[in-house]
Length: 395
Ligand SMILES: Cc1ncc(COP(=O)(O)O)c(C=O)c1O
Image 1 (cartoon, helix red, strand yellow):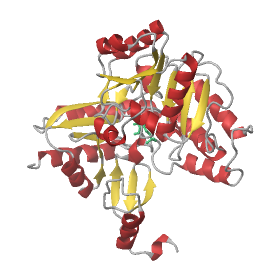
Image 2 (tube, rainbow, N blue to C red):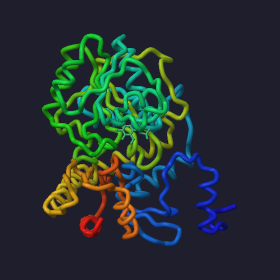
Image 3 (cartoon, rainbow, N blue to C red):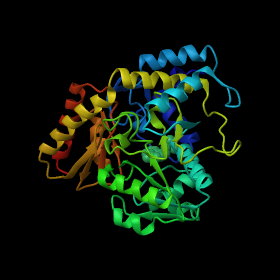
Image 4 (cartoon, rainbow, N blue to C red):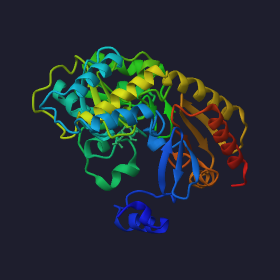
């Protein structure tokens, strides 16, 4: 039976009846996307600052990705990593060429949490140590290892006990880190901007200090760029802002232009991994590799990181200059922007949606914008106008 044989209310009730129930739902039934716009089944158009939780950096259905996926789907969809493959070989080479210096190898997988799991395992293997230091308010995913690194009680509590030997220290605080990192530490894991934790950028000084501490104690530095990666913050990799050279780098979300794909890049301090130490059935499949190759080409040829820096900077300046009593702070980097509010964000998100703008929360009081990097300046104006209007309405 095709979807257009169902009434819209039937589609909602089918999902409500059979879905896992773990997601909070918003009412539109989304059926189509193009650039920074998506449409619901009633034909209603939205400017999409959710972008699949920061997946659609290239916008929805970018023609280069659609073409690459269509051509590859007609040629070869699946091929495990026990065989060589043309698309995978090219992607690995391109990714490592573009990555911060020293990251010459990559493990390919399918989600952010998997990329983080791989980084944890590789760090433990390479150092023979077990302690991993993470930060409070961080988010690294929901599988057991990644959840154990996540520094937010609301995600962890119901699933304890978690993986042992993981410590959480205050973010952006070098003293706290230096009190803990020692010869027992396998790795320190950091986001360049804490995303789910409230859109909180770290200072370059902190990041470089963390790298130095890791080097001093023989610990590895894992940078989780699942959300900040691939252009969003104004650089292809957000760690370029500080000139970091991480030992492990986690990517996911936008890597394959909307298809599920992730990667854990690593350098010589991780070294050679033993054959059989880790694997993924779908990891490095030709379809997502072809999509990722097309995605990287577009990011570079259309200079999307530079665009994110420019239009993101303009939007942030405008939001900062608009004096809105309900806004405590506007912060972010490139097109990763958060507005810390003095009230709950959920009704604001609802009001924006009614006006045709989709946005995200980051905690209870932060309004988060993760628009596609191709978003037009005029679309960002509409977003800013609507935010301003909604936030001036009586709460
Ligand atoms: C920084 C960071 N790491 C890891 C993850 C987990 O990614 P996934 O949901 O693909 O497992 C996320 C997801 O939002 C993230 O923002």
